[in-house]
Length: 291
Image (cartoon, rainbow, N blue to C red; front, top):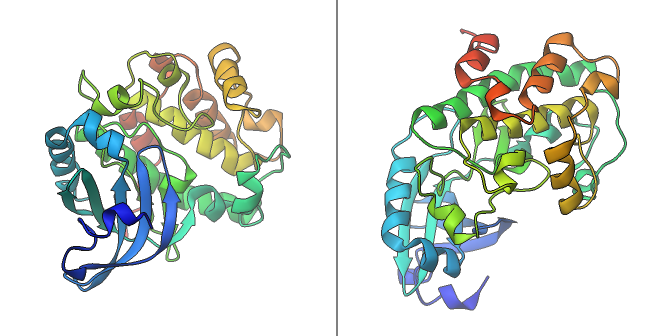
């Protein structure tokens, strides 16, 4: 763990005991930590200092307060924003489980996907059943963000966890906004998100909105059904293809693929954001089952 934060926020009164690193992203590093003050284990995200400096602490505080006010079963809870001497961190609900695609495709490991899987293979019937159970929860979570005026901009399997009892939870939405001036984009030269999963307009410096998140959902569904993303290769190659080539349907690569899932993936991956389904349409098509 970086020494720079030990005497500052994290080391204050020995409140946090860092156990291990959980992951790294564009805006910071997430750790598994014991919060002695709350007497619970949390996910602790340390923001990159240049993000804090360029966005500004006041704007980060505003964004955090907005995200922390959301209460939804399928959104990870945000607890606190702490800052000291140029460092800032967010404590969040710890969600333990598998990422979305790994949950659906138990036969395709994280390690295989991290190397950039290129082999297409149909999802098993059991996997399709898991996908049908998880998809309505994912749709509900993303739609809830949009209803609150937020756009995630970095939806990908690692940011969508499925707990071992089947709860889908969207993570890492603490620095997202759909306002006309996007502080996150400004702090990263306008480029936000992971090339494999982001919508083409996000890497063209065009306005992004809810349709951009639904494109990312489409990529996750495509990968769940086929075992690999629709476009392979390096980052620049993927971005170029997204801008110029229509994504294939899953059924063009593997069989069998349920017709309704094949169709919704095709619609979600359309290059023109205006031609993608809306959250309202997706919630109607994939409602959460009543208990």
